[in-house]
Length: 367
Ligand code: ADP
Image 1 (spheres, rainbow, N blue to C red):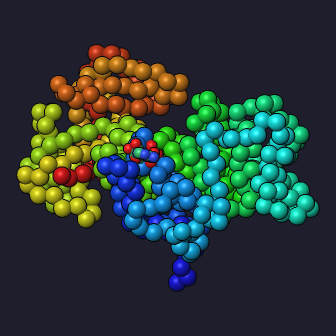
Image 2 (image 1 turned 120 degrees about the vertical axis):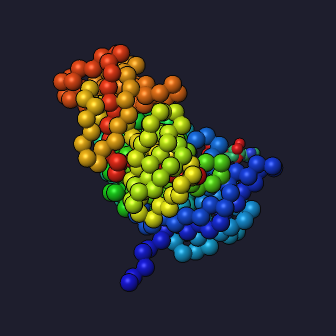
């Protein structure tokens, strides 16, 4: 079988800043043409990894290979990468076209080639009609696209983006998430993006590496990290997660019966393939808000599990309603119901309800 073309290969990367272990043995591989995001809270080590790929910082340990070449000792300007800064760093007194042609001109690229490259990269970001404008005559999203064109004009194998959308307001940010992914597809090069914004990472990326305290906790496609988080940290960081922790009382074939900590009564869990739980183990089940349903009847269908509770709050958010349901003294679950359905069942604060889910929809983590 032919090997997948690898764009970036990072092995056991370590970076210390004094006593801080900013990057703690990170290994990952990015495929050519992939949109890959490093996602995690502030201080997780994402920018440190990006700066080491760019060559602005040297690793203390580990190796980085780009397009098959070791980057050890290779200065930033000799690497096949370009970094797009958060602030865009456009020259205010130069037009869009002049901003984009600045890099190739400095590198002594022939005039005729500069013109065709500038045209191609402005086409890629859909700014050809605004090439004579100054940055101050552009919107925030357009300035961002000039910054991208200015990087793409150098034809890097890898484009590095550090919180690329953080300067934009919410609506523009959402539009640019889609746009950035399209630009990446048109440019055909590898994008590595640092973000602390989970929705942004899920929308744009082919794969995501979730980082915390210098370590990579999970790497996967957006659906994998959202639907099959491998830890409570990942589950909580990527969206809202309802949790129920308890002790395994019995194993019955492919099911386990959990005595919940915060809820009187037993909860059945389906053991995912490869999971080995034993009596006495502590396990946590995780359920996403949209996997839950609410009903007023106590009757469960087969393959379903439920908790009884009462509606504490109803939060209307346009497309759906979020119900906060108190199921125990310390247990409030978040249930999301699309509005066409919630309009019909019309539950109110104080109503007694049953929160239901398919046993197979619960993610089981054991300690
Ligand atoms: P992120 O990009 O995920 O916010 P960083 O890579 O910027 O994380 O930082 C990781 C850790 O390293 C943090 O604890 C940060 O304070 C520390 N750090 C980063 N750069 C430096 C530096 N130049 N000097 C000292 N500490 C640093």
